Image (cartoon, rainbow, N blue to C red; front, side, top):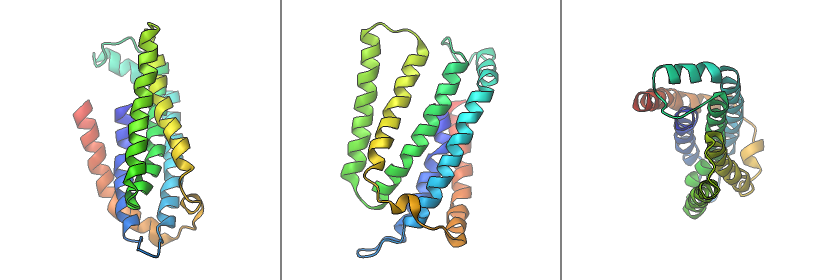
Length: 193
């Protein structure tokens, strides 16, 4: 899940924060188009991520098991859940980027804290009930960021989702983001494989 989240999130979020901050002033906030563009991109990327996990989970599982990369009994469900979790973390990153860009660090850190607390509580609950089925633990890891994404999106203004996007916005995001994305993908894959 961390590999998928690392490939689908941090570079995009970093790029968004960098571009959005340049358009946020004390009395003017013209960052909406940047958030809207990234929102649509993240939704499309998340759908693609889930589809890859769904249709290629068994092949990915075979590679991991045959290379001895996983000491746990995993199956296609676990791989698919990891891809769903990665997509969920990526979508949650939109709120995190908004809070960072607008210097609302209390909300940012609060959601981070409660996501970790929720995840910990859910996993402790599974351990307390002596659950040994690995996919249930992955489900808990998907539920926590999904819950925080849903709750945190209620704190975002409508312009995050509805601003009009022009070519200049996409170009600015792409020009900075492509190098950042390539470096992040390379780093994520080499550190974890």
